Length: 277
Image 1: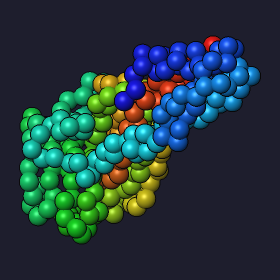
Image 2: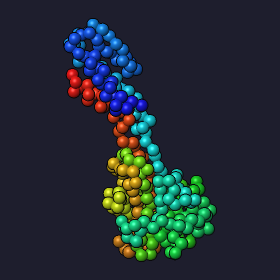
Image 3: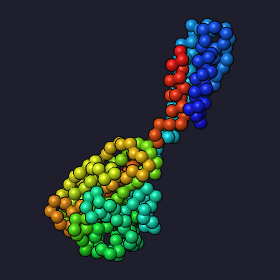
Image 4: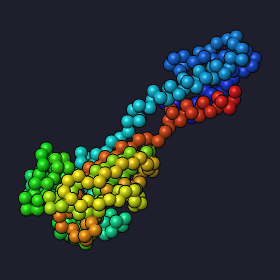
């Protein structure tokens, strides 16, 4: 990868090749390599500066596709019952929205007697708040509550005192975060929750679920620093009642790297060339 220092040296070499003496000049091959020429007058300098600019930008563009794809984090696909936090994801609850996160510490496989349902709760609290994941390939129905859990779906449930259940993503590196989330009511009686997306505890989105089925969705792109957090949360709603509040959350975060490396070095080199013309 081309460093900024190397790019600067390259820009100096080209600038020297465009001197008005006409003794030497440099052209750019298709691969971006420098090829020396002789006997080209200084009047041709602009042509070669443009050629170098195109070659440098082309080289940077060729290197960008793999980076531009970014790292994709899918909360359901990445769900873990063996650790919390697990990679970039954390599961917990807050005493109130934006308060410190209490990590769930009680994992249970085949939770609530349902084969394929994994759940996290807090050891000193009753069943709620919680987060659960249906790892099966079909809808799970909890017959005692009328809750329907989509295949490979995550469900969060607030606590009796309105404690929001929180799914948290933490940025592993700096970059641009593309996030998308869809909430839904998973309780056939009619889920009544308030749902939120927060960046570093600052609200990006606030909504309400007042029925069974599809609910509000939200997407955004925002710059993040390493260690920044994005929370997807559900509280007990305007009725201040935590019953029948199973809330589905389908969240995906794509982290795109900051422009840098070859692309940044090429921009530096182009800037040097334009300055020295």
